[in-house]
Every structure is written in C-alpha cells, then in structure tokens.
Image (cartoon, rainbow, N blue to C red; front, side, top):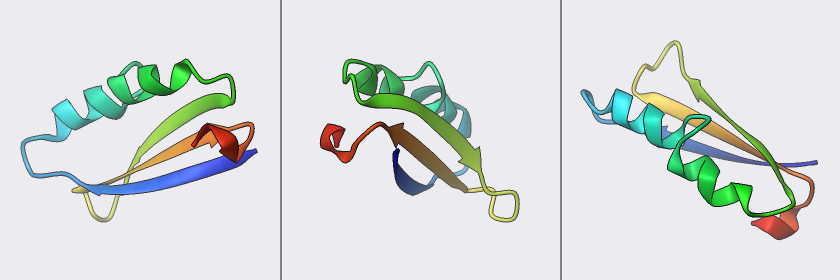
Length: 65
C-alpha cells in the first residue's frame, strides 16, 4: 500500500466547491479511478485550522502516481 498525502489551504467561501471537487465523488477521484492501482481517496479537514484540508490517496503501488 502506498499513500500520497496532499495539503491544501482553501480560501474562505470556497470550502463547499473544494469539498465537491476533492470529495468521494469529485473530479479528483474520477480521474484516479481509471488506474487499476488506485484504491481510495479520503478528504479530511483540520479541526484546528479550518482553512486546511488533506487528501490521502491510497494506491496498491506507487506506479500509479
């Protein structure tokens, strides 16, 4: 298992749009689904820094990156 971690700072007022794009049915996930090594993406929001989001992309191997 390989995990790619991304951190994003989202402008105030853009949270909903960001969550739709990077959430479980957003374009980010649709892009990766075509790769057989892709497993899932998890979107997390930092509870102490509300403008900060993390995506964790899980892959069977790093060759999908």
